Image (cartoon, rainbow, N blue to C red; front, top):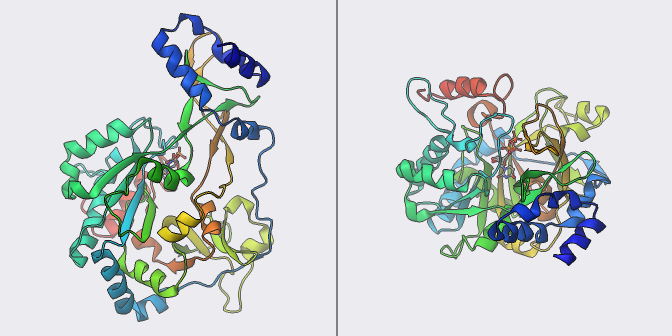
Amino acid sequence: MKELNSLLSEKGQTHILQGFDDLSAEEQARFIAEIENIDWATVALWKQPEDLSGKGKIEPIEGLSLGEIERRREEFFALGAEAIRKGKVACVLLAGGQGTRLGSDAPKGMYDVGVTHPLYIFEMQIRNLLSVCKACGASVPLFIMTSDKNDAATKAFFKAHSYFGYPEEFVRFFRQEMAPSVDFGGKLLLEDRGKLALSPNGNGGWYSSLKRAGADGDFPAIEWYNVYGVDNVLQKSADPVFIGATIASGMNSGAKVVRKTEPHEKVGVLCLEDGKPSVIEYYEMTEERASERGADGNLAYSFGVILNYLLSARRLEEIARERIPVHVVKKKIPHLAEDGTFVRPDRENGYKFETLILDMIRLMGSCLPFEVVREREFAPIKNKEGVDSVESARKLLQENGVTL
Ligand code: UTP
């Protein structure tokens, strides 16, 4: 205890021990374990966040356009379907996020987008994957990343719905790690007495978490991981054409992209940074670069990423020890105030620390941008209303013939 005290005092964080003596022995032990788990180097970043803006030489990247994909569709499909049949492809559904913008405490995948009957986000994800399994005549191992916050609820939901018809023996859940949050002065926030305000550490930690959990142990043939976000209800996962095209390209990764229609659209853009694939966030784009046009009149930086990547397992193993940058993100963080009351802030009140899968693309060394039709494959649900909302996703689902 003495050591803990001096560690916290050295870090300027003794406030979290307030009321410690009133905790039960079990609660104390759990709290101490939480504190021992803190990565102090990450927490210190609140003061001096890493400079994550593109520093190298930025250039446009070549990708596969819709026309080219259409011309080679059969060839790509055959290659991708064969890889799926041989067990070389696995899906990783990123469902560890908290969906704070949507404002529901339940896992985002449990959100019901139906109108006349229930239609859950998870259900749409499984439906889309099942159609691929049917077309290829094989099941794809499906890894679902949860967090401490939503693991139990997610598993119970899948069980209650009989995995929406997906073969249970092909599904594995694994938990991502959690990171502490601090206020704008760098003080650790508590969720309760003897409990740090922990939150999922971003989607960039999926591979280390999957490996730590040993979730892939039963599927030794995996050569490719198709990693994607839960909230795109038009997500085409394990798309054989995309898989085949990436394999044929000889690259270490592939990214599904949509064409940006106007310079200031809020999507991350795939480009080259010092010759390596890299994603520049929209807020990191200079005005000049955002509106630059190529010889064909199209935007030079036009490949918007939609969080659907195919990553080589071999390359992932090679880079497993490399550090992914940490993003210090302003968020609304529910916490215990000094006077002991629980506060649910309605505006940002502190920082969370997150790693992002898009930062992995650079480490992959090479990446094939694979263009898809936005209206057919991209209907993200991020917000309650307006852009990328339940409303806009419903409209797109209906346009794609889904009965709501
Ligand atoms: P978002 O960046 O949209 O975050 O996640 P979010 O947590 O779902 O929502 P907000 O920002 O709080 O409103 C993109 C994808 O990455 C997953 C999400 O579940 C979603 O599929 N994700 C995000 C994780 O799996 N873990 C995380 O720590 C963060």
